[in-house]
Image 1 (tube, rainbow, N blue to C red):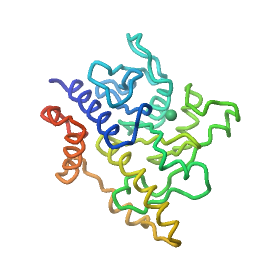
Image 2 (cartoon, protein in one colour; image 1 turned 120 degrees about the vertical axis):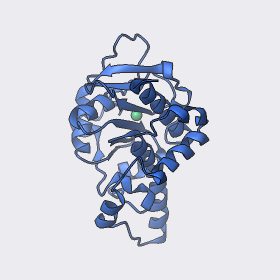
Image 3 (cartoon, rainbow, N blue to C red; image 1 turned 90 degrees about the horizontal axis):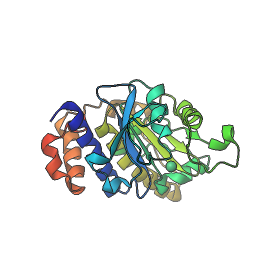
Image 4 (cartoon, protein in one colour; image 1 turned 90 degrees about the vertical axis):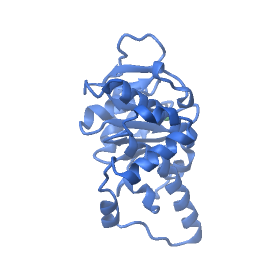
Length: 246
Ligand SMILES: [Zn+2]
């Protein structure tokens, strides 16, 4: 199995993991930058992530144009290309409607890091409001490159951007880090909301987040997570040829 086939296998595993862990449901999607052609990305056809197989993966240009494929693509695929275009170091992108994060997209309370497992999201999580540039009559979805680029601009150099009343998009150097971040982001939101009900709380410091994020995806403790989530998602047989999300 060649490099491309193994990368596609890991993208299938990531789809299944994110569905099993309730980060995505019927909606939401995850992509990788093409491992051999940096100006392309790989993303499923329009299909719920739980059902994605190798045959569903389509190659796209960064502007969202599919390569030799007539099957319907995700309406919001522009999120992916816009982030890859703006961030050459990014190789994996996810978009989710996880409702636990929504309160932080519609209020003034910042989504700070209170759970150590969520530190991959970094010290700052900006909020993008589509209405700021595109008015108050959109359907809130990112349906063209102009909207994708505006969202990527607000994401900036951060790992996660909340999308007002809609969900979040996240970006990472590799799939394993992306999956970890997407799994733990809604959990961090739940812990933060619970703590706010109790009163004062203490978030992780910038130094703690910096120290935790000396991330080595190939390390045994990180690969343990990939194996755990992949097996839970019914992808144990795919681990034999997996790149470990690296
Ligand atoms: Zn969406």
